[in-house]
Amino acid sequence: MRLLVTGGAGFMGSAFVRQAVARGYKVCVVDLLTYAGDTCRLEEVKERIAFYRTDIRDREGLEEVFRRERPQVLVHFAAESHVDRSILEPRAFLQTNVEGTLNLLELARRYPLQRIINVSTDEVYGELGEEGRFTEDSPLRPNSPYAVSKAAQDMLGRAYFRTYGLPVITVRPCNNYGPWQYPEKFIPVIIVRALRDEPVPLYGNGQNVREWLYVADCAEALLEVLEKGKEGETYNISSGIEKRNIEVARAVLDLLGKPHSLIKFVKDRPGHDFRYALDSRKIKKELGWKARTSFEEGLKQTVEWYQKNLEWVERKLRDLRKYWEKVYQGDP
Ligand code: NAD
Ligand code: DAU
Image 1 (cartoon, rainbow, N blue to C red):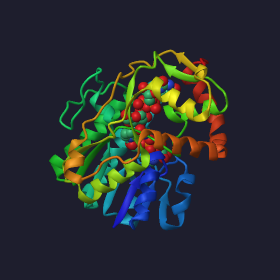
Image 2: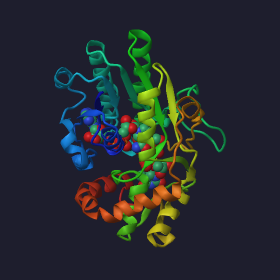
Image 3: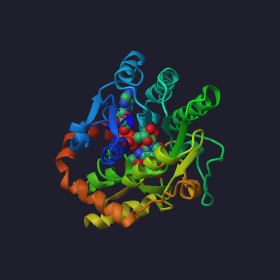
Image 4: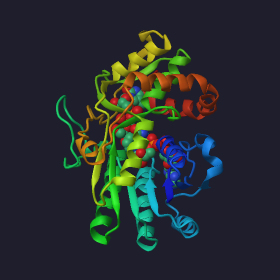
């Protein structure tokens, strides 16, 4: 089966591509290679995939890929994905996540596909207090420009299923972590900075809660959805592993043998959602998937990966430093 994977050179997309190739799928990747994209993540499968450096905002460019590759399935990961950047510069988020998705769905009306997996996020539901979990039927109340752009992407998929009968399946994963994550996201920020004995920035009081899923487990869930999911349905994808940010920071520092005194509380993220937690009974019951990796094991694998891949991090550091200056405003 021929898959077209957008954002396949990103953190989650590449984990999916590596597994899909191992399962025997023929994969074609479309990725613009923004600051977040990197073909190094696809090194081990590069001989077995087709790669197009194409912008999903570019309709003609995308159509050329559809014409040449005639994909049977679309798995749509490409996005501007970082909440803090969406707060600094929202426009690119609307352009890529909404208009880019629209371009793909429009093409899917003319180049029939058997399945379209639209990768949304748990952030579309908004925030929770200390209790409760979002089900697939919870209302969408997105709070950041990123989350709003993802909610629009998510709802476009719904509309194209309902209105044009496209075979769209929506997935809403919780926070992923693991090897190859760009060090703007929380867990690699902690690792990369602590390895250099630099302060580890915690927003606000560090009590916010996220649900953490190892990226390889998420890729597996997506393959289950692709193979067994039902058109028009939405599936939450999560692990049940909830942690306060301060707990995550301490756990990483402990693994690295670094002191907790590296933690520095900084100005809170504007509009910072307090807690995300998903009810993922539907995917367990209907598709038989559940997360396999414990937080301890996943974090150990992740920390070891960064320790072994310092050169990759080093290459990202120049751009990162400029970005960190902007986002932490010189603190720490
Ligand atoms: P990422 O930032 O690591 O990767 C995004 C990829 O998309 C990059 O390779 C980038 O080059 C590419 N891209 C960006 N703009 C593009 C454009 N205009 N045209 C073509 N390619 C473009 O993101 P990620 O963490 O791998 O997330 C992948 C998807 O999963 C996103 O849709 C994100 O919203 C969603 N998601 C992420 C998480 C998470 O914890 N990381 C959780 C839930 C959902
Ligand atoms: O929940 C799914 C979402 O998870 C995805 O849709 C997004 O693409 C992904 O970026 C992620 O968003 P978050 O905002 O939850 O992830 P981030 O890694 O940016 O932050 C995780 C938590 O850590 C959050 O409460 C903010 C906090 N944080 C983050 C950074 C970067 C800090 O305290 N300090 C930091 O330096």
